[in-house]
Picture 1 (cartoon, rainbow, N blue to C red):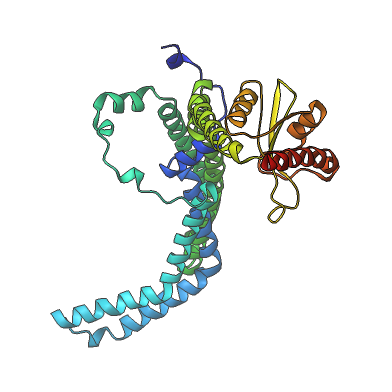
Picture 2: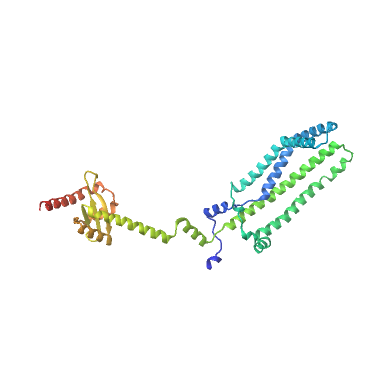
Length: 357
């Protein structure tokens, strides 16, 4: 029960972050993406406005100049509609696709590439009215969104008011101007208004992204117990790992003991260490350690050796050197050749005597 009340004070692990991404949980500000698309649209309009104006003007002139030939019928109307769609598609579809790519790029820049279907899975918890009301009324995120909405309306409204207030005097001058000047003034004023409000919107969305990042990191925080459980999941339960290691040692020991009856000699400490050696001149470059052990294992090696008639030689320095320097199934190092050769020579001489007898 105490684990349930632990504070989430630890930073999220890489695995927790990866699991969150797989579920589609990332730090993202939709406001920032919208602001970038808005400002990009204004830039496109600024540099491509004349192009769009000329295309629309020429198309309008063509339609009006040929209005006398327009025939109203079901077939003709579908052809006219196709022509209009073709005009808009050929001239403005590239700009629309470009703005869509900007929106996607702004989203990817915040979160990286994320593809998941987790959000499409049905979840009964989402249908729970109590949890929904709690998220809406009492969560930190909902309160921030509410405050952000009021602040956004106030900031953008104030910006628009300041911009429009500065244009009042210019509007009075337009009373005696022709329609081209009025249209130009409206276009410039509208662009200035959209640009300045767009920059303010970008500033607000930047703070929104910072909050989303901060809130995301808070939600990912873990308790110390969660980190321990994750480590167990990744590395395995220490108890299970120790059992596996113990079983592995038992298997190695059993295989080792099976080789003792075929050894040529067992060199002992005499009581604490036992090392079994095997030498086949036609197969080995040097004698090989086939079994070794201390205390109980050493006693077991000597017991098996006695039962199978394997000679046991007491040589304390050699037994210690072999045990420390040579692993099982490894050949002895050159510095031990001379000492081991004396032992093997003694053992082989005993075997010859036994054969003669």
